[in-house]
Amino acid sequence: MESQKLRAIGWKPCFELQVSVEMLESNVVARVAAHYGSQLLLMGEAGEFRIPVQLAESVGDVTVGDWLVLAARDYRVVQRLERQTLLLRKASGEEVKPQLIAANLDTIFIVSSCNEDFNLSRLERYLALALQTGATPIVVLTKADLSSDPASLRRQVERLHAGLLVETLDAREATQAETLKAWCGPGQTVALLGSSGVGKSTLANALGAFGLATGEIREQDGKGRHTTTSRSLHQLPSGGVLMDNPGIRELQLPACEAGILDVFSDIVELAAHCRFHDCRHAGDEGCAIAAAIEAGDIDERRFVSYQKLQAEQAHNSRTLAERRERDRKLGKFYKSVIKSKHRYRDE
Ligand SMILES: Nc1nc2c(ncn2[C@@H]2O[C@H](COP(=O)(O)OP(=O)(O)OP(=O)(O)O)[C@@H](O)[C@H]2O)c(=O)[nH]1
Ligand SMILES: [Mg+2]
Ligand SMILES: [Zn+2]
Image (cartoon, rainbow, N blue to C red):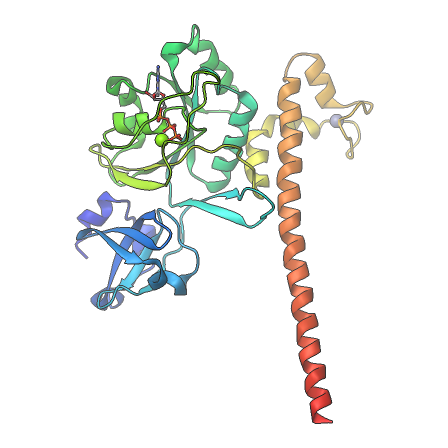
């Protein structure tokens, strides 16, 4: 397959292995660049094109970044390739079904500003979500020009996870965004995540995804007005593909226990040293976590954040499991009703 163009938009051996040569005689592959409700914007070897979303119905939910196999004749989608990574969030409101944000990301830029938006516990939340996917998280602290001590903020963030890379910059300056190009090379897919107004689209423009709208910040509370309203993939001059996202108002975690255990591995390790294996870390005797907080080895804030995120993800995964169980029981009930009706009819 002449896949130079596909490689430029993130095509990799792990996807190529999923399609046979025979399949490609009558089909084409393309990547979802945007999802506009009734239409999908796709990127393929021949450039960008749109298809009605109904043509992808048979393969279930698709999201930006997905790779699809389409019949060359009528663009009906015949297969969605297995995802290498998948970014999910809990949908807002009562809905517990996770919402798909993006597929097949290599790197996630977690963007926060050095001013009002800066919050370590919020960053831990994003980190848990990003680590759960298997993509590499990089924290980008924008608006360094508005902070009196960006270096100190950077050090605080670096301590959140072993080996975490943190960049501080003025996102309006293309020369400062240069440092991020290391993750935006040929075939790489990166996504920008963060609150509204932190400078995601400004950063995308600085990296060469020209023409994205950026917004003014409200003066009263320093918050943005959700300038970006849909997710989309953009090709970068550095060879990678970048996904801009609308600002997230309040990120709620879906089931992501592994991600949380990864972010808070220091606390998890400490807990193994509590005297009692069922220590609740709430004033119990011989609690290693209490001792570490006392000694100043870990912040109490970090421990509280760990407990909060753990409880939240457990609640959201439980409710999902409970709902599945209820649906299963309901299904059985309906079946038994139908059966008994048949029985009556047969009698
Ligand atoms: N001083 C300063 N202003 C910045 C920086 N980055 C972004 N801005 C400004 O912040 C405002 C918001 O930037 P956007 O790029 O639209 O923010 P966004 O994260 O894309 O916001 P949403 O699309 O709403 O999620 C714009 O006025 C930018 O010029 C920075 O590093 N320093
Ligand atoms: Mg934006
Ligand atoms: Zn304990």
